[in-house]
Length: 151
Image (cartoon, rainbow, N blue to C red):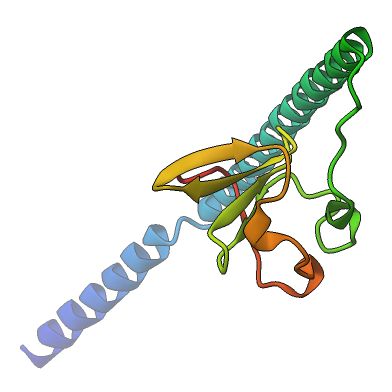
């Protein structure tokens, strides 16, 4: 009887070990990881191509817009409006986001090359700096960069 119980226990132990080894997949999991890595690389490559295409379209749009604006300025005999001097400092240059000045509750819109601020509880766009910011050292102000205007 004792031998029978020991034999059954040994058989159960061997069966349990074999089932546990099968559960690990014996390399199947490794193959799946390689496939997953390939899939992830493919997705990243696709995302990069999409971003590249989007950037090309943006550049094309803004180049066309700039060309049309210069043509308009020339035909209307107006002065070409470029960004204000402070916008070309290293802190702001090559940024595509809106610049927010929290102390003055004012936004600089680099796309329209002007300022958005509140006057008499109404948001106003002006190509010139608001009078409340005249003479202020913008390089020393606390600013935030925003993807879009929260108006």
